[in-house]
Amino acid sequence: KACCNGRGAVLLSVARGKVSEGVDFNNHYGRAVVMFGIPYVYTQSRILKARLEYLHDQFQIRENDFLTFDAMRNAAQCVGRAIRNKSDYGIMMFADKASVTAHVTLYQHHT
Image 1: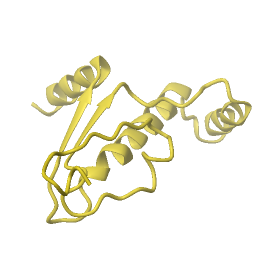
Image 2: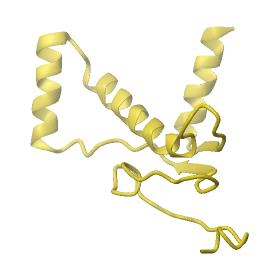
Image 3: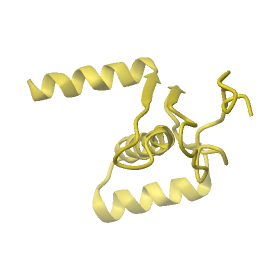
């Protein structure tokens, strides 16, 4: 209701939670997403440990590589809620020291 009246609104949610996955914001809703931190998965899970062992044994995928890829994929899904089609627009901001380091590293590799 506040958005329709021009006052705006703020929605807070947790990555990997119900709001971050599966909810779409139509039209002018959800024009900005700010992500604080990187959504790493809980690493003490027995299921995750078995998956990591399988990936290492079968494909030589290191634990850290998988966990980082999974966290970045999840972050992309979360902030992707601001862009819903090819003509849509929005802003996505990552507020985390590690994301700044990753951006600088990628930039240095491409120059």
